[in-house]
Image (tube, rainbow, N blue to C red; front, side, top):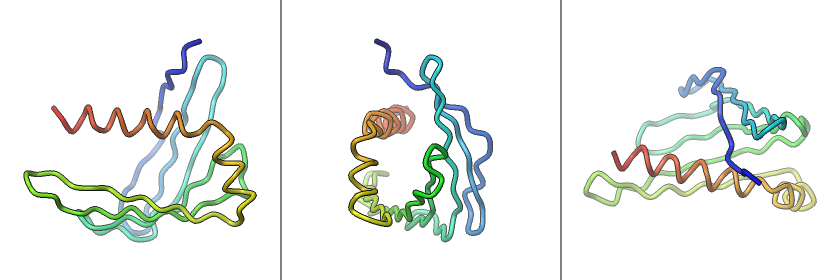
Length: 113
């Protein structure tokens, strides 16, 4: 079974007050996601909301912190806050780990060029 996800970005306005939406597809399955950027400080931090449209009440607040490592490299630490432990467990059980991992692998490929 092919587990590759194709991603289409509908819009992506990465600035304080901006928003985004993208859709991932695998075969006949389609998964939509959207959110708002609450704070964007280039090379430092991004604070955003993240919503899987299949569970519209399950909004996560995410903080992405960039730590310079030298040699034009940085460490990215992402923290997600959700409404309950049950919501966290449902997210982890959904299989979203594959999509997240694949996204970071594609980012690594782009940055290595």
